[in-house]
Picture 1 (tube, helix red, strand yellow):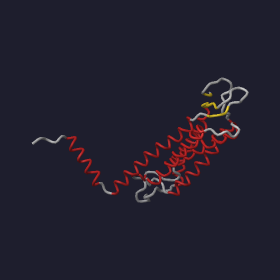
Picture 2 (picture 1 turned 90 degrees about the vertical axis):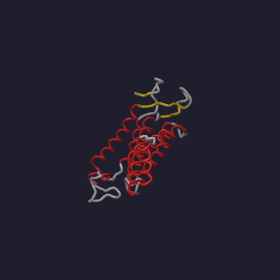
Picture 3 (picture 1 turned 60 degrees about the vertical axis):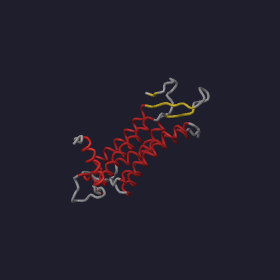
Picture 4 (picture 1 turned 45 degrees about the vertical axis):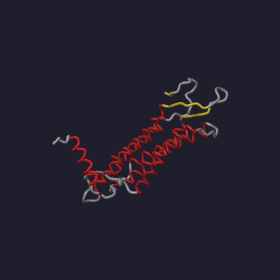
Length: 218
């Protein structure tokens, strides 16, 4: 009789395990998947508004048309939001001590209950990136571009960050990492914080790089 390869036995065992996995394990798998997805979307949202160049309509007295410049100074508002997120993750959560869904005094400190849920750092950073990008877009359109609408700026500063923030918020609640109220509060807090920081930056930093013609503003 021909021997069954070890890899075949392993594959069959894995398939059987997936079929016979109890609901608790499925819930854990869903939670882990949500954690991975929301981490990706959180980072993607923050990266999008950081890497997005400022788009402005050139002065007709020099060159007419839309121009794009990426400013190194964009790191200031982006890092401010990241710093606030880290402050929440490592200090504020321990002060609020709001348990995650399914966590209480009997299991706190074990498994997925090793830390607390409020505020949700993932939701906060994703929402603050959306707020930052939206503030920059609106400031550029009304203050620097005389009300002219640019599709590229809207997509990079508003649309994509909004999608990333939405997926992050839904994923955190669906994965039972935070409850709906915590997600909503974290999202509103992040949106307002990011909006204020982004607006202050956009009003102080002109989109142009001067007359150097450089695509990167140092």
